[in-house]
Image (cartoon, rainbow, N blue to C red; front, top):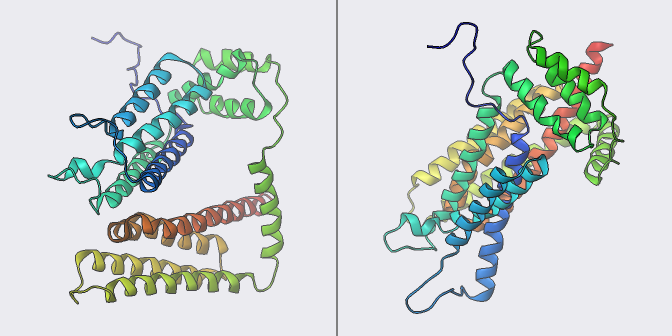
Length: 343
């Protein structure tokens, strides 16, 4: 029986930096697949082994994932977590690259839908982790645990002003009646900070783009340029799907064809909705455009990968670049809205 006054311990405490590790994991996994496929194509698909043995690269993937787990369980620190995500992503990509052998009777590595299967798996991993991270509000215990985790930088004498601010935010969301919160605030107040590292190229680039975007948005024709760009993207998407449908030798639309047409139509409706409200609110319009791109990435591209395999990567990269641009524009518009409200 649980003693009176004791709270039930929460088993799973979410890591607020998990999405950053997920990005490293997915990028390294996708990169490993592309490197392996490219290497095998250039070298004529060599095999390791002899007449009796065949050492599949799936085994190397398992080895990399094992190394990732050992690193994560053996060493402490954020750098270790990032390294583990990198090594684990390489291992998972090397492993899942042979999915065609897992799902076919004849162990067919070149099974055509295998690329679409890999793509769906990556999407599911992304959605599951994002759902876990943002599916419900963080508890006071989770804020406290993440604050304690970030305080590792004090032991390494590597705590800067930005990291201190993040820890203070976590502690402000923690249970104020917990005596540990006051103790940690005291430790934080008496800690010598290191200078904030010079801004890296990415942050400098982002600052430059923000200034450039501010100048571009002041132009009278900015909205028309955005409208034309997304109308062009919508038309190009429809023409691409129509081309695939027309090229069908049977003359009848398959389920994949109908799925591409339907998802492209839904994506187009969001684009038209964004165009309709761009004069009233850029933020709402950009959010509508973002939903359109997300539908393209998470739905339409699945079926495109099914039909074109690695040939669909170019279109995916194009969608991702548009999504990055929209995320940047949405972030800027939200910041401007907050600033205007505070005036």
